[in-house]
Length: 319
Image (cartoon, rainbow, N blue to C red):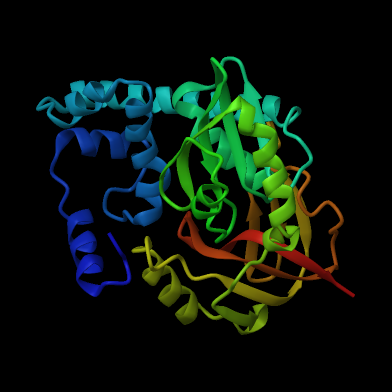
């Protein structure tokens, strides 16, 4: 539902404060979330993917079993099992994405055609490839001379309409940005030529739109608290507030955690700027550099201390 509708924001806010289902409470606790401080991010990144994984694995009955469980401790055991299944799913998608990127071709769209395919994970892998290559992607399986699979767009490009207008496909069913795709092998080369002839690659140049621009030194706690409170209820029609933070003086750049360094933290005076799952990010930045950064905001509360955070989408090193 759209989160720019005030009534919907109210319903979600009240629902998150009044959770009584033992299965859902077990899943919240097993995910190490604070049930008294839930928000859209907790749902989108910790709860919903776990349930979606059961559907993709044809195990949706296990999710129903969790939500109809009356014994909390049995529910907790089931929740932990589902969380592990989701972790395994994420690792599989990561591994397969890295594998198929080797064969994704350097064209205006990214194409992957295999003999086996990836089943219910075609769409997830296609999404990752689109994000990594900054262009629409197709992850397909060759089934008796018909290429079948998933397509994902990049940015706001109307991919489904573009594909249908070619007159060459057998199926493009779903949404404008994500849909099931089928094309006969005999039409494949003509379709790719249609793409090459009708696409300007400038369409897919990454653009980040931001809502607020401010210097780091002027970013006080009243503004931070207001933005993070608004961001608790984000979703369709109302994404998280994106901020461009100017004049950030870098005190240090760290890679963490120590045992498996895979994330980057840029420490400034009033902010920690974080980038996850990319230990090479901002490798050209060092102490005493000045940067501007764009991202969304959060607050790290630990040991009675509060620290402003930004989850970086991009940055620019200043002269």
